[in-house]
Length: 627
Image 1 (cartoon, rainbow, N blue to C red):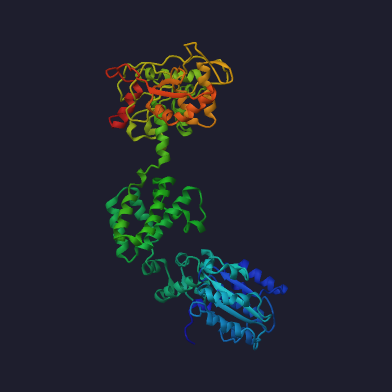
Image 2 (image 1 turned 135 degrees about the vertical axis):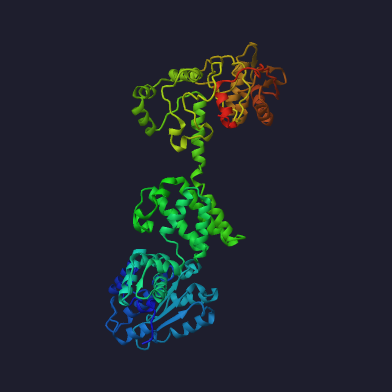
């Protein structure tokens, strides 16, 4: 007897033999048992998962001499002819080569004749998505109302190419990829049938390379058997199939985690010289980093990881955190997409592994923000709350100091501590002294290495002025803060208890005592007019209302109002909204009114030679790299 490949020899002959398609098998068996047979079926799913085999099993179940039965006997003439593909009443058509309208016309003519030997005449059209649009249209009426003895079974790997008019006339069954463990068990049974011993790891890698397709798994298994002899080992298939393996991946990524770029490039060249393709290496590396990321998140299922958790390098796991592993995985995924357009895939791979050598230095934008926020709170003089593990460490070293630092403070106490920040830095230690080297990674700031959150001993003490309220060195957004000006006068209190002065806005009381009369005859002061216009515009023109709140004294004449602002930005907003403000004033006065604003020169005291506050000194030294 001639040799028969494993995929053909182990083709399922019953619904029970379908691997990984339990839902499809159970549904078809129940429909046959209840006699509810549809006139058209549509089987969809990836390649090699059992679509055509299921169609043949369904044909045998319906045409078995002892049926219809959900379990065909496989011994009668009808079952044997269908299995061999010689039945006159079960016609298998390749949709890729018979895709024009003439082939469909021939089917329409044949369906009018009853079956020769079987109970049903069944048409199995494989790769049905390859039919032309005219062929699909010619088939619509036939599959919608076929003769009682005709059943259509369509199979396709690309469901999106099948017209919706065809889908609506068929019962659709979605076939899934077969899990690796089930593929591995089938391969073990196939090896036992051939009296071949196979290592468990070798079968696992064959199943993994099949990507859920049983046909691909059996084809690869036949190839491995051809060069492995009576014993299939992982070492044989690794060298012959160009696999990398967990041990090799551990070795190269341990070197990358240790920042040994030269050894990494040499190891990479060794892999490629042994016949491993670049695409295969990228795919295996992506799987490896994905498994590390799952382990970092507490997932230890071997079916998800691909290997036992203890086989992954502890050195690599400890060197990279979750954020860095996500970054590494994204680098490999992007390289796999872009490599087809690359000038040299080898250069791209070398560059990627060179980047992997400094992956431990990668800091995400979120971590940078946390570090900047921690530095901002430090430089502003506010106490920094250390993480729980740092507080526990400090509790063991200095219980009394930590207890004092963790005590709850009221708002005035917090302001008092901010005001005494310069004094504590100059000569008095803070309640909690946390060196930056002992802080977690997300709070480390490279420019502040060697300093601590309380003393900053590297900066010489500077006699600084007491900070004013809301003094924020980051308010201007630049590395060098704006010049210090005299503290503004305290804003006046408002009679309206519900209106609070806006932050950074000038709330200037009416000192002229002048009264104006509105169109309705109501008398009000200039300050009340200013407040009325601002409130009306705040409902629809927020920018105009915000600009008006920052204006100075209003000088009223018969034709309009003149005022000034301190900021060129506010002046630009007011000029853009000048028409809106003028219309609002005109509606109040009952006559056309204008509104004119100009920029007021603000005299600032020269502070060029004045000593800078301690916080500013620390910030300047930190960003200049001298701290």
